[in-house]
Image (cartoon, rainbow, N blue to C red; front, side, top):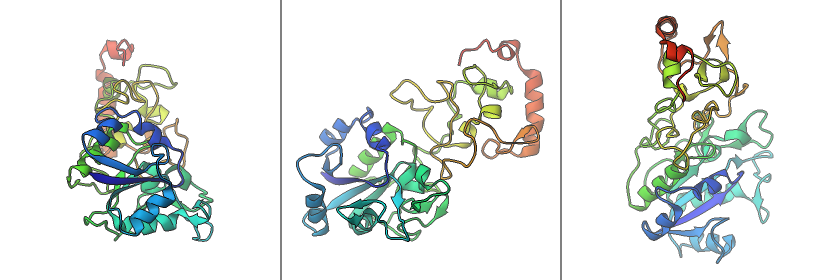
Length: 311
């Protein structure tokens, strides 16, 4: 059995709501098959108060295997954390107290991982992530912090995080697995594939057949702000609720698993240098991209040019 405390800080409950939609494994599977024991979740536990759980863990009577934090860490005003409190006590102080006691610490969602929406400028409440502020190491706990098993905070990014990614990470930790992490401390098993891979609009992208307005069949990257070719996430390889994703529904990827989310620009407009997107697909050189796109557009088959293919 693995004891878990799920604590909300500056949160919208997006991860908690997404968690209820998980099906591979489901939250019921986590409890029945993987032995997760929720000591505390603000929406799922009712038999004990948070104060009782906090006392049990901090006194050493109950081991803490997994600490999940959902939401940004509000450090203001002036580092006091008093913008977000529990019974008058700053939640950031409670997180600092619990984190060293946990075998694993997991940031559930981009807000907990990197600051997210709440840390966007002008950031009036001085929000940060657990171990990052956007893409800069540090955050609340500091870049050198490690949990009892020797790992940094595990960042399950997303806004919200993918339901099945959250439950799979928890299942793997409950089974005693050590997760390989990328440079932003995201589990590599789930954050090594671009959203662009698996996008049903790929052929339109390849031949540079781009839409200018939402609702069309073409690619959303060149004009409508899609960050799918720059964002690692499982959204198009494991569909949400097994059915859909943003790009399949005709909405651009906003890059919500990225450390800089949300970017300080219009989410539905692609910033450009001249006629070329300012931010190119991951790893692509600008000169080669321009040459390739001109050739691809000239080679586009009529069925693609005429947008006959339903994405």
